[in-house]
Image (cartoon, rainbow, N blue to C red):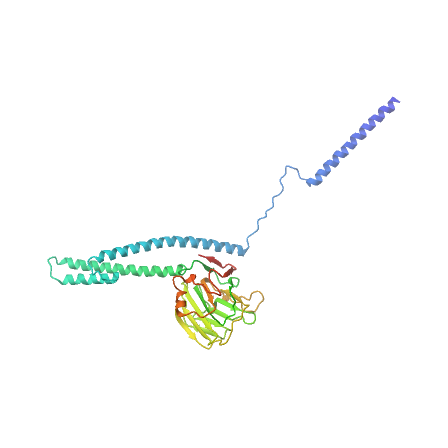
Length: 374
């Protein structure tokens, strides 16, 4: 009896030990399923989530870098040029003051002052005197000063010409840069007033880097009439269109590349009177163009491209695209007078704004790489 009890206890202990191992094995297996066979000390494989730059990303990065370098170079050049201009002004003032003493006080300009001194020196050279060499020395000195002043004036003119090509027009703080000719680069304009017009004036500052047979500056059109208003450049002329391609005015002139040029165009429905102004000078005018026509509203106004109506959602042609810089784009719902057109090119050019499109007030969105610069 005791022997049976002892055997039962031994078997019971063995059974309990076996069950405990099973539970332990189940625990280990469950842990292995959760850990997916990885040791806790092992680091998971890192994920490289960086995305490769596309060709367009690389192009825009290059454009941004080039614009930054250009801005730094222009700033450095500006500082050097300002210092040089200050030095030239000081030198001219010093020369004028030094020559004003022996000359007639009524001389209005430095050139006239120097010429009078020069003549006085030659007159003195013809008078008898004890020191025969002194008048000749005075005459030579005055000749040298006159040559130096004229050279300084020529240098100032060349500096002003260089600055006119590099800087923005007077009164303008920003421009839109079109870095290259592309069917994706343009600016969309959202007029503040209706484009239903019986007369209008449109002015714009342009600095083109290249011109083909038809380089669009601005264009307005509807689905039924895609060529309602256009102003574009060709290799030998400036063309203004109202009411269709056949209704146009051509000014036979060549725009200087790399220099700012001011263009104004006017049209009136009453007599069909069209005019083209370049740098405040009337270059072409005619009557009987689109007489009685009314420009319809509901169209699309763009700068640097035209929507030719051939395709849904675009219809852009790379050969028509503008490359360069534009600023001071304004449209009025009336014909400006000659004096008003001259003012739009003056010192406060970009502060004179149209009531249909006003530069700096009307929303103009650059697309496809076009950007505002200052």
